[in-house]
Image (cartoon, rainbow, N blue to C red; front, side, top):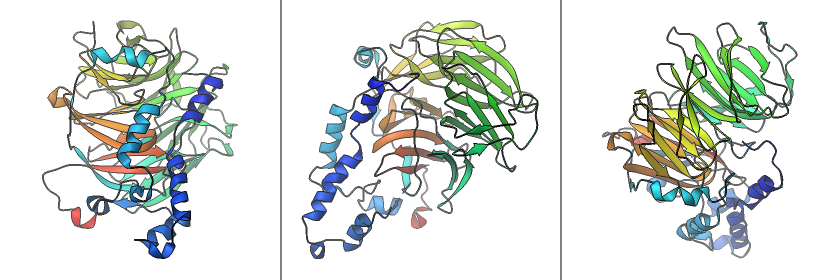
Length: 447
């Protein structure tokens, strides 16, 4: 990934056309109208007083925009604004024209699937991003519990009680309250969290300077702190928590110093350290623990032996750098996401080429998740679109979730019942919640 946000990266972020720009039009509309003639004085009062109003499933069924954007008051329609975004959104590429070059190989999918239905948009939950290429900052541990980054805080949100609480604050000094060999007892100050992972009761936050902060959610304080490297190019790009066949909890940290490190959280020790020819942006361990997908600042990814780090097979097909990967629970197929706007699905029984390529609308595929039952795969673009594919259809059918704003992360709940999407936007930042669609709808009356 990009080491520094230089002029090109800064220009990329500055060019992004946020919903705030549309909101300026909204404000102009309000200034020019008589409050007494409004269809909804309450709505206008809430807007003008900057009150954040959530949207429920019942309201959405009655026609309200899921993000609460009052299109009827704006000088632009939703369809027109969508077209503007599609035309003007600038996809970040390390290799020029990679997005255009990948189109000819992409599968034509049938849209219109309805696998997850909208439940709620919570605007009091502000999900944020620190690096524009790293979008793994939202994690669900149950269908009601989700963890996300909000500025310098890791926040727990309960969709059951619609309440949030701070789990970890890294704005000041953070130090471990437990003593373990290799742990930095002095801790860190003002950690800039670049990536996050939460699974079961373990939370791991990775920082811009190679920091790793480990906290068990059922214990007070922080358990373990480590700095993976003192290299200048030290950003922690991704963290993957997993359980070994023997039941031990481990995690892998992918770093910009070209290293992948495996930590044993039973012993709180570094257990493996693999080095690669280029910065590693993401890794995923196969369900049986034997194979590791490694992608980064290189067109080709690699599949390696997780015990030795030696290459099993290169993954040839993408045209730019990759930032996402995930295994299907069957352990036979996996997916990789790239800045060439594609997600490629691979089969370990024939790795000469990917079995399918799926195309995004706006930009890079920055996050990929499978449901634990393997039925669905979701891929997130940098903004506006999350695509949910029916794997049983051979990825030929999809549900396209369409909204506005940069995506900080997404996560299925372990039981597959919920899908959470973090939206980063100065005006309409929020947490979107979707529920798996079933043949029954007995909860409609309370949603």
